[in-house]
Amino acid sequence: MPANSTDRVIAHLNGDPITLNQLLGPLIESHGLTVLVNLLQVQLAREDAAKAGVTVTDADFQAERESTLAGMFKDAGDQMQDQIDAADAKNDTAESARLHAELDREYDQLLGQLLDKQHISRPEFDMMLQINTYLRKIAEPVVNRSITEQSLRAAFSQLYGETVVVRDIQLANQQELAEAQRRLARGDKFEDVAESMSHNRQSAELGGELPRFSREAPGFAENFKDVAFGLQPGQVSDPVEADGSFHLIKMENRFAPRAVKYETVRDSVRRQLFDAAIKSAVINLRQDLARRVLDGLRIDDPVLSKQFEQRVDAREAQAREREKIRQDLDRERATTTAPATPAPIDAPPATTPAAGQ
Image 1 (cartoon, rainbow, N blue to C red):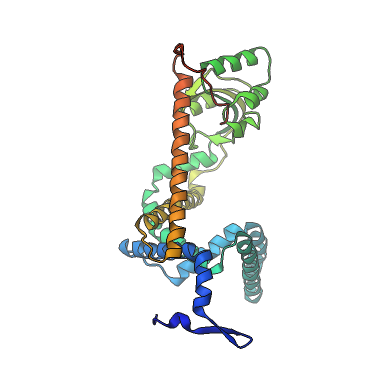
Image 2: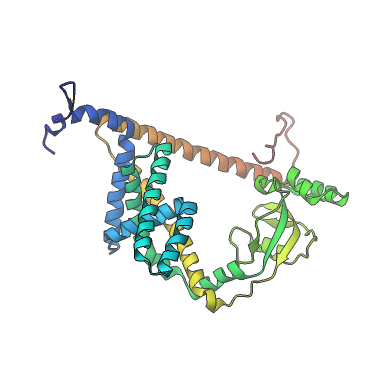
């Protein structure tokens, strides 16, 4: 860009010229760092794709846009897609094209409303799509290689195998465990004890009920699943120690495997497994991309430099807060699981954070 290019006139007001430089200042101050970081992430993602030997085409960018909008506005898309499918089934190409164009207009309108609400410009959104397209293309061959016959059968078992619904009371120590067992023994309802005592506050609000899961479901300790699947409806388990907590588990219901042959749904299972793995991989790559930009970026412009310093400070403050929370949890776990020891005479009274904190 020529040295004086920012002095060029871009508009007039009552005959007075407005230069590009007058516009750039407020734009940089309000959106400069965000746009700069997105531009750099696009550049890094493009370079990473080239290093990986991945080719990204205009068709890939368009496919990413379409899948993103379909996911963001699923209800509108599903309703219109039914009409498109019906037109395609009749080989009515004119009607199908009209419906596609109508769907594109509806997506565009919904997107505009969403971006306005979130104060995101369309160029920013387009840069995000570009980044995700590059990262998806980088991740695809890696994910394809990672999907084995064993992982497919495990996913099939998770989707179509036996499942259970249980209630869980998650407790921090032996004292809480004894109190929960005492209350259950005197006739208190399991869900009432869970609601008032369980440290899993999300399930506690539902009387301890956990989402329906299979033996292959991630996120549960193996011994927790072993005990849960060994219970009969209405039965309450003995104490189970898992992931640093004590659990009492009550079987609510169990569901027999669905009568589906693996070979019949193998392709569908693979698509679901692939989509979930791609989504996770893109998130991880995006986080790594953002870290690389912030770690390597050096800014000369004073306005952008100040914005950058504020963002780095905020990032470091968040990291310190996460570390403090981790240390607090470690101390609480050590206090609540270790045998009690007498406090020194001159020590202040010990305090324990309330459940859920």
